[in-house]
Length: 515
Ligand code: SF4
Image (tube, rainbow, N blue to C red):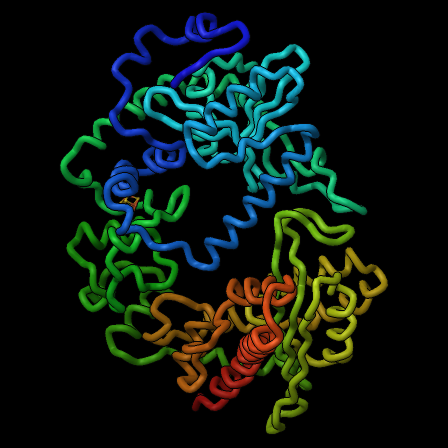
């Protein structure tokens, strides 16, 4: 299936290390994505080819990430006006169509060009015909920096395309430019940074050949290679076979200790300790780990006596605030950069005095227009001029407020005052409280049901920030019917309201403790 155009097969092959290509092939064709999976873990590669039914199906969040990658890919094409897409699904047809486009000097760029060489099939995001008639291969990524594993991606494409006879002058990676600021319209040329990886890719060719040999050998094995689960299961991406290879850990497993260091885990495992219950009383642990260990071993929560003093710093009226955001790769509104957060929802509960009933205020943007002005304007009104503003993980809310101040300077004075009133409940819990049911996590989703059992997130249609973002995108995307929109609106309001009411109840609980 290999072919060649322009000058070249001989000149391209002349660059190869002697014998590098010999014996690399298989009766099975593998795709670029499978090859890349194999660079992460050969077992992953084997399972993808032979037992794909064991893979977890992509969930809504995976699909959202895939969708975003596709949007970025489409935007990248705008850098090459007149480029032609190879949109045939059939492999052989796609290869044929690519060959015709390569041979047509009128075509300035090819998108999704298809190539096959020695049992590897790739589709190339962009092939750009340079002025000197040679070609530039560009892989598009939606990350803001090149990552090490991107080199594998470009290197395998370089191998297949160059050995198919295309005169490749350069192999590059286009990634998102985080410094790009959205003006009237998205300018694709400034949105992307293109890095020339040609030299690194050429140097990597010997490793590619070695990797391919390993992969083709693994393909012939009667069963998956015996590779223990480890760091590779989530690095550089979470493997689709994670649940298959990593059985759920029990509640008393040492990995359920908060922020336990990998070295401590390794030391405990080497000493034959995997259950928190088996950790000896005199085993050297940090103060935080020891407290958590004691809680699990005794089944009793721990509350530090200093908690009362910390809670005494709060000033009424108390405001409990939580924001929801989405952070698209392609900014939507003026002044925003890639991955800036669009704040679309807030909830505020207010306790005017210690025994008062909480009042509730909320905001939810319900269309695709820029929500920032309405968000911050209503928020400033709801949060008044004095009193502590209780949040869970101050860094998040404070950064969102700083973003808003930079986009809408007319609010910067008021926002600055709000920031000075923020009071973070997270470090208070982290440093003064532990409950065996935290299971090593200080997230509100773990802490709240452990300390206030009637406030769980179980059964909520929207039960975390990521789900909130997905629900909101679908709500404003205009692709749901009115009844469904109403349901999503309610689910979003319930979720954000639960976070702030949860903080009210959490604080009530902590204050009710007998110190
Ligand atoms: S979960 Fe880990 S060990 Fe299992 S296939 Fe994936 S990367 Fe390999």
